Image 1 (cartoon, helix red, strand yellow):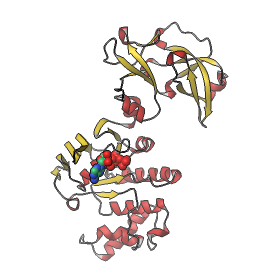
Image 2 (cartoon, rainbow, N blue to C red; image 1 turned 180 degrees about the vertical axis):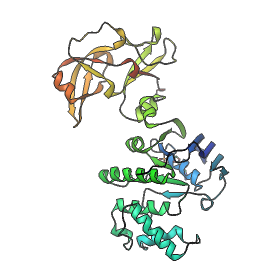
Image 3 (spheres, rainbow, N blue to C red; image 1 turned 90 degrees about the horizontal axis):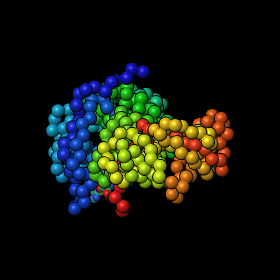
Image 4 (cartoon, helix red, strand yellow; image 1 turned 30 degrees about the vertical axis):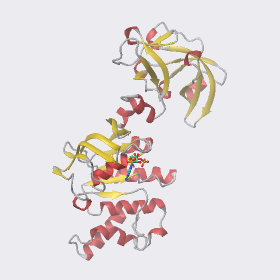
Length: 370
Ligand code: ATP
């Protein structure tokens, strides 16, 4: 399929946006640039302000302060009807008493198109979302996934410059969700429509977005490609929110190494001064397994003895819980390949050596105790 590329053209620009509900600040000084054709995901925990930001872009709720520019035009104070977007909500929001055709045609009426032009466009949209024969049915006769495809068809019917998706997949069961995720992604690429999707599902964001905007408590914690936010998280919140992350209390010591008990580890570059208490963090899949007794002369290899306390078979890998008195009561989680487990004859109760590669062991500021 032909894919429309993300261009260098700035399409949506949000500047110093604030939103207050009474004395509560739901958005605090949000600035964000989105390029034409980009697929952006707002990702964060419940209540972090994702939907509020999406609604401010749509004009459904006006911001308290700040500007929204769309395609070179200041739309900050325009009502939704004067902005150029299509929107899909979590609940399908189709009109139950109208046929699927009429639901899709809804936004096309009063646009100067003739009846036959509308009929052609409706059929084209039904085909685009893979439901060419469902036009005469009513929403209740379709499955949740099908209804959401119709909501999508309705949202793009007028060829808006911007597609807004507010948790469009979260009401669907897991299998349908993954399937529709692919379809939405493919459709977005085909149409090249700039898209902003709200989700609290990290896997969805990683799979679909060109860039992810990670939010927390009304602020943006990090903006980056899926690999950037996953592999190079800026802080412990992002590191912990996206994917699994082992965390070890530690202190920065000579040469920037991280001390844990009497042992020190080499780690990824950081700017912390000697003596700073930090959290050392490593992803489960970055831990390398070695056999018991494995020794390396290189202090930068970060090798340590552990007891394999628990193993869980997760289909394509083994999730292992590892203990070492240096970690105190907490355990490290490591994901080992099936081959590695076989080769090293790993089993519960075995001792072994693990290596935490220098570039994958990160240091983060310790969160304030709450
Ligand atoms: P979720 O994933 O649960 O939908 P979210 O990140 O989309 O969360 P928002 O819906 O944007 O969060 O809400 C952000 C904060 O603003 C929440 O604390 C919410 O309670 C508050 N809030 C949202 N709308 C209103 C409103 N109309 N009046 C008062 N508070 C509101």
